[in-house]
Image (cartoon, rainbow, N blue to C red):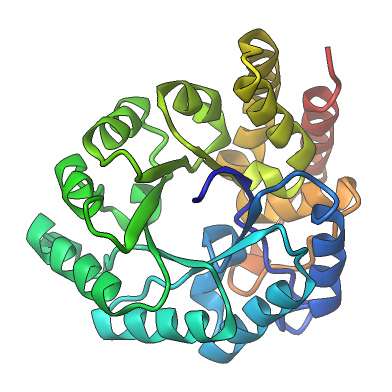
Length: 296
């Protein structure tokens, strides 16, 4: 079962652009002390598109080595061809991950019809050695996975859930209502996590949980206890901070913010490394963090 709060963890890089394993170990040591339910490695916030196959494998191995036993490990394995995706999924299964999150192929997006995507996901699920989750991320792919297709794929015994990062509350509701009862829909943005939980989502895979895992987990726990008013208070405080580390300043901002919170964000890979935060941006980020994490 995939539920609770899971961060799509960042990949810290050193000045030469290599994954900084010491920084990653430090972050995992901190995250292991929280109520996070697991870690998503090689997601969008992990800059997976910049990593070689060897780097991907080494980063995942490090996470498996350092993660506490109660954390579930999911790896992003979506690539542009069905064969390459299956190959990476099998590689991740062989080193011990629990499930694979599969982004749809998008380079030839005009031809990624519902039937093409159906065949893609079913072939991978039929041949993979670990469970598969669908990843809906239209901001980066330009593809919105149709709700009817999700409903069909949810019947496959090895497709156990999805991450929806559309931020579209109506679409999220359609995914939940159209899918099978044991199919886990995870919210992919902190802005709508509480609403998603109310609709029946099983949890959230949230960038914000990289730097504010305690608050994200508290929101989830208050909801589960029926304390909707308290959960709503946390949700409202988190919206401006989530906007800052996703929409406004992106991964560079997320890594900067993590540094303010005692984590090691490290560098980004080039070309993203060359996006510079101004002093005004950094000041705004600090103020947003202080306001968001000051409990009312």
